[in-house]
Image (cartoon, rainbow, N blue to C red; front, side):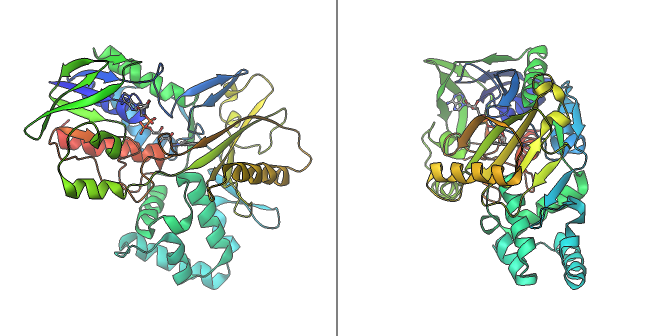
Length: 409
Ligand SMILES: Cc1cc2nc3c(=O)[nH]c(=O)nc-3n(C[C@H](O)[C@H](O)[C@H](O)COP(=O)(O)OP(=O)(O)OC[C@H]3O[C@@H](n4cnc5c(N)ncnc54)[C@H](O)[C@@H]3O)c2cc1C
């Protein structure tokens, strides 16, 4: 059986590794000169910056991505963060993430415990947002700000944009798989190791190969055409989201076309800083609920010093984009950094913004519509088709797992 994969991002490579390990003849087509998409390293002045991700795997060595990497035999070491995360309060003090309840009154703490225990079992059926869910039960400023900070960091959204149902799935997974981790060598090591697995199983990866068309016959994908050549295959996997995929063939399924209109990408801004001294001093996430724009910061060199030149630290901040004025968003983020690290010396290495065709998430959390398409042997993977409750690359892994189950591998 032969599989063609459109795009060599994490989703395409994970699917390719799984299929090639199961005996499929895999051929991957990537339009760029390099593989990895938004999950690979960008070397700059001796720092390992990245094309997208902040070198963090949300559930670390115990999560769905780590499990899949082990399953396919990808050689990746993940160092779990310790602590998982800390929160900066309005007073400037920090508390451990698992102690966030300490920011609440005793009555609210008891209520939160009860409601969370029930809600994790009985997820809300309505489309209530996470913000409205908090307002309904708590109306607490600290919780609302923490929710925005968490959603901004992990999903590049505000709490008002995330369905409570999806957020409760995410919280469920946080209890199940626990906290984050950093792949040793950065996110490029993950996609590089997957490419090695594919090649060792006889698969081929072509860079500078843009797929222009999916060839169809009688509601089936028959192959793809790339760089003017047609390649016949038994299945096609697309790592470029439902919308872009639907533009590659004549799709007459109005219900599907209506559904994919509702899939919205999420926008974000990442800032990479260099410092001679540690600004955080730990490898977990530093949540900043009281900052104007920055949602969270990490200092990955505490987990893997090789991500920066000797005696340097690599610090990365992330913020969801709130207004249409990108310059203002960036300036507010830079101002936040000054306030968060008063008197500290750091150099801004790079500021990157992400939206539309190169977003933080192709389908913002809660807007995913699954892996299937109107063609029975065409599947979408990647962050345009994440699995339920999966934060970013964990969602990519859960989505690939669902697609593979459907295919039968
Ligand atoms: C600022 C930022 C920070 C992030 N931080 C984290 C983090 O710390 N942890 C985390 O878990 N996730 C993080 N993410 C999300 C994570 O990077 C993405 O979810 C993940 O990399 C998406 O992988 P993908 O395979 O779905 O898509 P992509 O990486 O976009 O891969 C798709 C590939 O398809 C190629 N392609 C497109 N069209 C064609 C075509 N016609 N023919 C051939 N090839 C084509 C593209 O060039 C690309 O290489 C972050 C993202 C951003 C932007």
